[in-house]
Length: 126
Image (cartoon, rainbow, N blue to C red; front, side, top):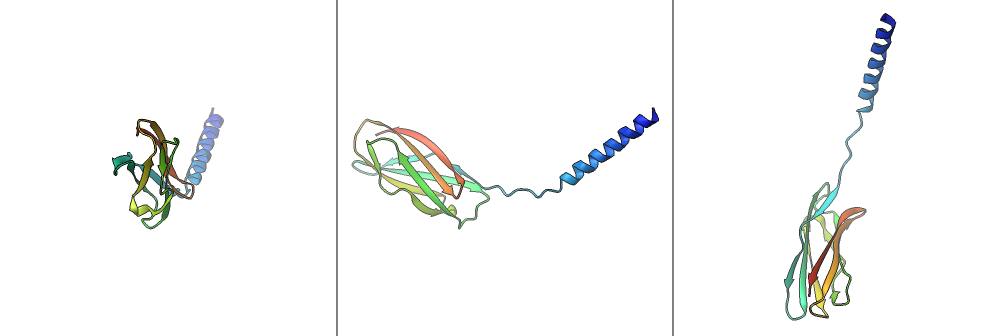
């Protein structure tokens, strides 16, 4: 009986040493960009203004990001995409020309910094 108790104690001590030794890892730095809802405004005859806003953590205010907008319909034309920005800008505004009225349009927007970013899909009626 004593041998089993001693063996159990030794195995417990070894496993605790292993767990303690493996917990010396440094925390990973996490970078994340998160989107706010998209704002669409009428900017005149046959024009829309689409504003994309973002926030996040782990990125410096002066890190470069690229704001993108792509629409999957011939009913609209995106004029100024992609756009270079700094993470601290926290928004980008795109000009969209409306070619056809009363058409449901699906768009994808996002902000990218290297491999870090977000992608957000939305639809609207022209």
